[in-house]
Length: 115
Length: 113
Image (tube, rainbow over all chains, first blue to last red; front, side, top):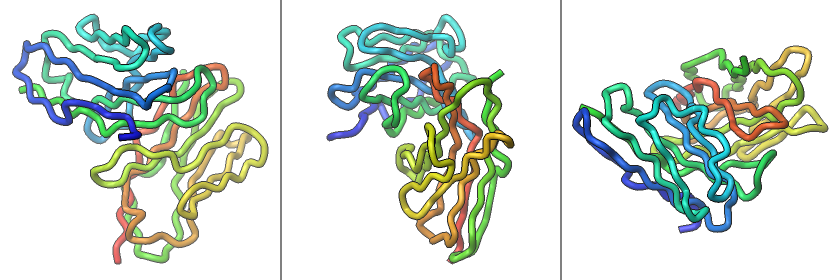
């Protein structure tokens, strides 16, 4: 499709498991963002890529969280040794340009539940 | 610290009622402002945005927002809501020199027939 695609849409993990969440941005989009949205809250910024460069990872909550975008298109957010507080919807967004872009296009999110 | 606050977490209106959702931001310097909407089961979509110029911004589906710099506000309005406006509404801000959007906690709007 033409939009941002995320997979899996739903993931249930046992505490301590590693998970990987994938984001396919809109083709040609330079900027890619990951956000975390806990229940009843607004999205919280995690990290930002401009092409393959991770320019900001200040929002990653701990060193268990890792994101990459090796070829400047598809991105993966990896969470190691998941904990219950990691349960949230993880949103990916992309935009055409770099800094000072206009619109972010969001995917439908990956809902992670850690038991 | 940069932040966005939304005044109402849950709003219930009857169809044809007028809507105003409050949003205040705390930023130094020039700021870009946005309203996003999330319909049930769908992804976040941009309703409208303000970068500069006319402080009254018109968006899709009859929504508008007014940037009032002196009040650090960017309230969303619609004269007459429809049942299909039932959704979660998020105000967001970004420093003009930055890239990361900061979102408010959202307002859940329920429009009853």
